[in-house]
Amino acid sequence: MAVAKFNTEAMEQCRTTVSSQAGQFGAIGDGFSNQYGNPDIFGKLGASGAVQGAVTAMDQAGTQEFEAAEKVLRKVEGALDKIQTNVADTEEATKNSMRAV
Image (cartoon, rainbow, N blue to C red; front, side):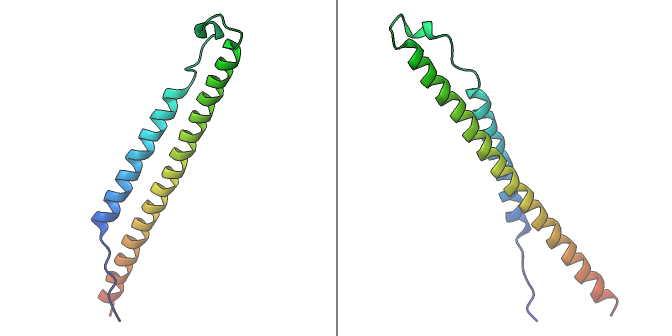
């Protein structure tokens, strides 16, 4: 029977990187919140309200997209953590079963 080899350092590095990236995406999304203002900041043009509405919509869309990216990366981090735990548990069980023989 072939012995499976797992690069635990590579899995941990991947998990750590994903965790870091999730935090960065979350921070970017937080930076979008409420960055729009009063229509008057766009001048006294008739379209000032429409411009402000478009900026508000872009702000909200940016916030939602970065929050979604953070959630996906957090799920990836959790999945990698589960893989690491399962590999460690399997290796420990295998090691213990060989001692009992």
